[in-house]
Image (cartoon, rainbow, N blue to C red):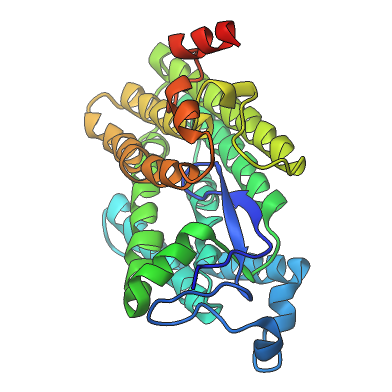
Length: 342
């Protein structure tokens, strides 16, 4: 039997500000070790939370409560630990991730974690900034991370249709890994992204912790962050407009006319901008750039190949791939030659 993806919707990827299909968990089936769920008529009477899962507003409220508790618990743990700030922050961040993970098991939906990527950095930086004097570099770091976080979270909220929907990638992993999925869910979907974004956020945290000073390089990093946020905004907006038309196929307009993943480029550039601010404010800590490097590797080695593999199922993908770049929204000679021949 072939896997059925019924009533798909689209939502922002937590690890890149992009767009990914979600599937209705009520109708998803597989030939693997177990089924994702039974048909809705068979489960609605058994599932105490069925009405909650169907309601977008109730799902929002539940996730807001989960994340508020996770943040409060993380802050409390950080204050209770007698560790270097970076170690205490890592422990608190991990504990908050475990808390969110437990609720993903409770709702049998790994997409409970999706907003964590964009919520975590602003919360961390705000907690660090509270009650301490801010340098110009600290203000710039706060502003760019908050702009990024608000935009990406708003993009997720715009495409969120409730807890009965789950990112197609998680559904695929669940089917392929069967009983091992809880481990894949924890380490692959929750913990690794948390560690990556922790590393990405650390340069800004260090600017606040050590009162790093402003510099021309830091200003350039801030400008790069603003450019990245704008790039993601326009890329996602163009994709939303394309998908509202429900024409299917491959998007070939705007930034997507020249690049297959312009939104991913924005996510990569965003954290290089933060890293540049951190290294310029605190040049004695060049390893602060490791988080941005790990984030880039995550997109190049995991996110982009996975997305390309799914797009390859669509007719015309080979020609589209040859006519576009992976990340840079710049024309390729093949694309220009193709347009001239048409």
